[in-house]
Image (tube, rainbow, N blue to C red):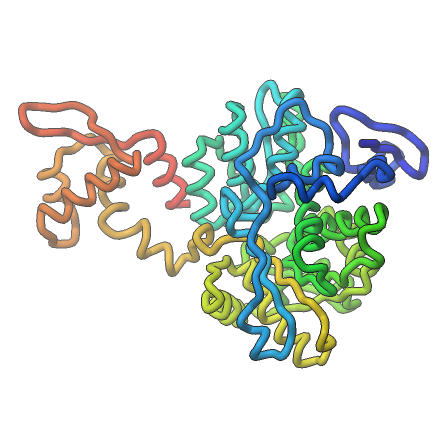
Length: 443
């Protein structure tokens, strides 16, 4: 692995910044003449199958990420196209960010004596929390005010230290960078960490091995994923495995489209979108993402908010439950079909980046962690109580047995615990985990 500025010639090792001190962007390269792709086929599927094109690490921190399923979509028959789904929801924490985390955390271990930090709108934070736990390291996650609750619950479950900052991830990134410097933390934010990009690019290697696509539709927020896929195919071009890079198609919502609008040369918006993982107003990887799309000969597509439910629904018919930020690729595909963008023999890959299980929208959330369970948590926040006392204070009339069942379920989830006994009465109180969940659900 080599990191050298092509403008001023300065070489970097150890902790690698995203840009040279001269201001030029950096990129990690390898000795491509020594790469033998035949060796890949002899190894298990997953990110580390491609170790010749990954940074060397002393210890691999892995949860068997990568090697996600690829299958032909039923939409193929309806549209008269060859459409395939790359289902990244099958990664350990339910998103493509596990590819990033395994490489960034493995490489960063020697520099993370005090732990890791990430600025994230959800998936990266949940992923870091899991991999840092696996590595027995502290994880600090700087998240904006609005985060999908499923991802938030993952962060809490894996023991991450949660820091709320700003309205969008754009504000969280410089704050996390400053915290990293002040506290000796290794920053794995995608805008600040070139190493993790190397893990994400393995998605390109898998697509090449399994499909050899002509077009790839990629949900685009920060721009790191579409750039990493481009980098992966560019390296395949370097070693002679492919003759050209597939056309990359960046998909964003109309409400937040800083990358797509630049590609399409139109005026974009930076408004809130319910596809939360795509709510990045000023992506630091914008230039790289735009270059990736243009150099691949691809394009960009904007999707309306009201099309997100349709995208999610059509994917469920394929057997895939995706978050809104992933479901954007389906309406984008339909738009391009209407415009006769594809040829009959094209092989089109839809990258589904994150699971719908991680994305609890507000209307769905009310039916999951509100109602009786949330009321019990609130009662126990005030003081320890026993079953009958809790039942008496529940606002909605219900049988004691039903309240007792909720108590047992909360206890099994580790949200409440036995505080003490008085005679036959068992008094319950919130656990630290329960208090954190209650606090974050009430944000």
